[in-house]
Amino acid sequence: MTQEEFVEKIHLYTQNAKNLIEGDGGYNIQRGMAHVTSGYVEDLFALYLATKINRLDLQYLVDKVTSIRFSKNGKATTFKPDLSIINSENVLTHYFDLKTNLGWNRDLASYLKTKNEFINKIKGKNAWIHFDKDNVQGIKISEKLKYKMVVVYGWNINREQMAQNIRIAKEYENVELFVLNNLDENKILAIENEDFERLHTETLNLCN
Image (cartoon, rainbow, N blue to C red; front, side):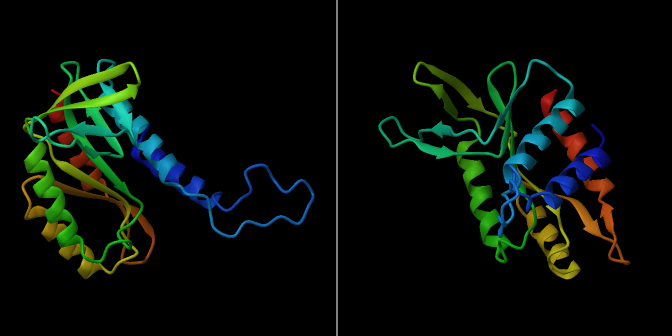
């Protein structure tokens, strides 16, 4: 799957999100809010990265809860990446958080600071994942783990604010920000090829 195909699939899904899934059957049925697209984007992103990495020995877990305990008798803490990747040695190497846009959070600095501190706490620790009652997989968190925020569309905030968000993300050692699409100077959708390439390179490097 190319990055153009990835973007086009999301665009078409978003366009159709206000349609009734089963149609109106000839009745006067109308949908107000569009269907939530986040689940589709998560699934598609996992498939997109899997085709780029092209390895059958990796696990790609979409929206799956991971549990960790910071002290022997302490209460378990859970976190749920939109996509995590686990290698053949049961090491969680990637933590992706997908955002359709950044309009949901105007105080990104505080949000990323919290994520940066959390990654610091879990790096190198043992954790586990429940698949069902009798299937628990023990894993280790990579010492190189980073919180990777992937923003599909960056145009719902102004250029100055987006530039500031990018600068803020660079301040944290455990955080990376990728913006995959934006509007050019003519307000036409443009793929951010540099961020796509950076995403590919950094993802592949951590898989090796």
